[in-house]
Length: 95
Image (cartoon, rainbow, N blue to C red):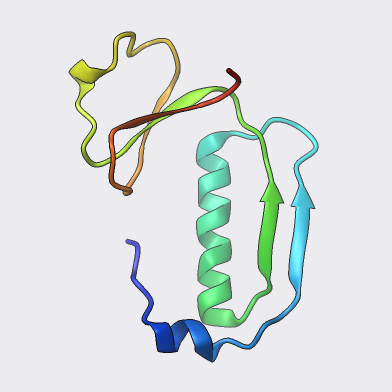
């Protein structure tokens, strides 16, 4: 799903306006990922402005492509979201 851009594709885009957005409350992680992926598509294909989004979500783990369920001591402590990135488990939350 993730496409690697070449240096010529990265430099073709002229600098545009950068939108700043702050979420007023905790956001659902899965919904935030969908929104971010849609924005990336709009930037790449439609020339939308880039976005810096300050967002918080409840504590969770993301499971990278190398994550193994037996590596997590308490699999039910927080929701686990699969990602397409490399790596194992990453905790996202306070502390």
